[in-house]
Length: 427
Ligand code: NAD
Image (cartoon, rainbow, N blue to C red; front, side):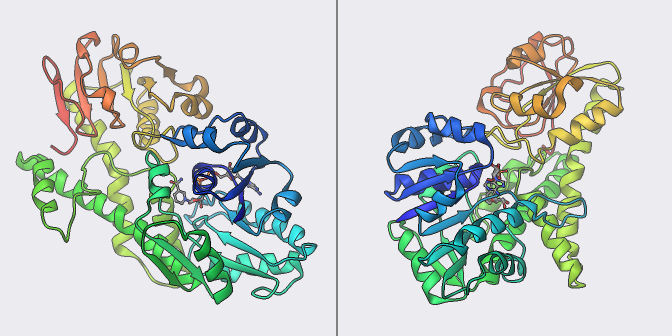
């Protein structure tokens, strides 16, 4: 099928390249010229394992790029909206990119003769597609929804770091539609995917996304609380988690105690669900606590550090890792930000090293912190190392380069504990 994708970020580019890999004709459109130029050259603008390979394999053939929205939409029959839906200060989702995308798509559809399907892949709180997106599209298309154009809410569940694998082999596909034609058309696009396909209405699809992410976040905060008690009791929470996970009702995923969750999804989505519930006068006590527990972990890490090294003022502190998890260069809502904020307040000297995210850190912090070219470089003469991201290359580091070999491990990743003062966050 002929598909266009608006937004070539983590979701849009993986969706576009993934659908091209499955044999569809895909055109990716973005408002950022540099991203489009990178993709055109067969280079992924983001770090994501395997993405370069499928871009290179399909570019110029099944996968194309464009900065001309009119032809992009006119030459396709399905348009995926994959623009960002970041948090506002109050936790609600910010729809500025979505609103622009709807207006721009609508203006093209206004003059398009053939039926067109719009697919909302961006994460939007329950009710948004029906109450905001459809009215906006209606306004600019001046055409009848479900007759001249259709709409589906199709949430994405990929995990950064293994996004390509997840997109091509998903656990499930959720098709949220209020009419049969839209739902059937998107089902045809996914014919080649070997997984359960659940057809629901639009707002149920939106809710499935939020309740899934809120549940995963809850698992992490839960195991972090268990970990915090375990540490006091001298119990290894990882052994506890292993024992719990043998129960198939629990499973072992999202049970790694440590610095907590980050990224562009879990914190934002939990906060957005809390905010949406607030609008309905429902207080989500459990999810409020999930956020609080998560935010406390970074402070706990520094508390443990202070106990080992004393005041942090003027100390060189190596932050190993910045991405919110290994396998990605994404630093959005990473615990690294809370650590840096606090370390700056305490007037410590911060040097950071991340195998993929140094570039994004430089864009965010400029000269406010230092950047190391390697983990060794970061550790040289440092008085404290904080393990922020579970990159495999940190497992066997040589801490003898440090002035004081004090290591607080936020991810239970350090294997070489010889001759160091080691402290695990919850173990
Ligand atoms: P992102 O910020 O990486 O990418 C968004 C892209 O949209 C950017 O390249 C931006 O330039 C582009 N854009 C903005 N306005 C545009 C417009 N009018 N036309 C064309 N392009 C436009 O965001 P992301 O991480 O890919 O997330 C996108 C959505 O998917 C969000 O709603 C997010 O919550 C959801 N989601 C993200 C993930 C994830 O792991 N990142 C997983 C599932 C769902």
